[in-house]
Length: 515
Image (cartoon, rainbow, N blue to C red):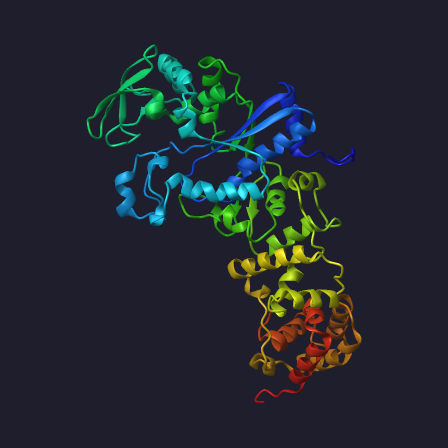
């Protein structure tokens, strides 16, 4: 932990201060339903919990991070990414009982969960995974299930008082699963026997009546399930989204049910805002508006995704842009002198094994393309640009990330392919632009660094008779790429080679419109 007492304290440390007033043994719980792809938005839940657990351990407390996978939740509808012919008949059944999409082996919940768990391992999140199917199936929830059934009327009163809505006379906190049709959303509780450990129910969908133990099928309805598992698992801290914290929402009902029904103090809350996808609004698995964590972890170092989430306090809405802003975020993590870098967030992000490359990611993307992704050629071009004594293995790892980022997210400006011959667009430049390129060609062979090249561009662009800065850059990109925009011009020229660029500029300066 940083010793800089003058720096603003990180939100996780402030949360730890508040939580430690409750004691020094904690269970930090997170919970997500595997109803669709796990996306960057889901990271806010689990990384918020992870940061709090780490901050507590830094203070000498004992803290476990538990990830409760809500795989008993029923499929509520056929989502856009599902085949209606397969899943329409399965609506209402638990996710852990459904087949995996696309005819893949395994179950629906594991199809989405397993890639996320592998990503969490790479993100170095030390978490205990507890599927709801195991939580209920092990019998750990039996006591709170029967307590909820016994206290049905008190729970109904709390729900009515907090939400302003009366529950129906036949409402029950228990959703039984039909042993015949397996639906979880059409059961009606007829009675229960705590001593015998059974619940009697009838399925309104197929008419089947059954007497089952809680572990044999079913789950508590969400507003009761949440506080019930606080008691069953011993949860003392939980981050959750703002939707649960709305007035009359599940947090308001849950904390009262926790105290008044289960006799358990509600956990310390850390409420977080959504993560939005740039240009697409808040991420949602059911709507298909997502960027999967499993995909992104192949494009940027794990620490960068952690840093993206942990830098902002949970109550702040953040926008994830996988284009050029993502490259800048990588550089912020890599570069100790980066402006605005949050060192404590970085400390919480660098769990183990992080190796800064020492080359700005945007520059590596450029070099990789000019070198055809050949590692030897990449190292040669980097050395030409002054990047020496690099960790070759770390550079090679970033090269693969750069390749995937270019294939998936790179804007056209970041893509580089120098034509073998002068582009036609260069022949259409104005006389001022062509004269500028001719003068720049004369200067380039004597320039060694991107800084020197950048200074020469600006000087010549704004000299008497020059085309101005904007038109000068347009001329450079037209001659080298055949378009109006591209990567940072000075770095591009330095990496391409000043003499090679000068030859192309001379050709453009001498070309006629009809040439």
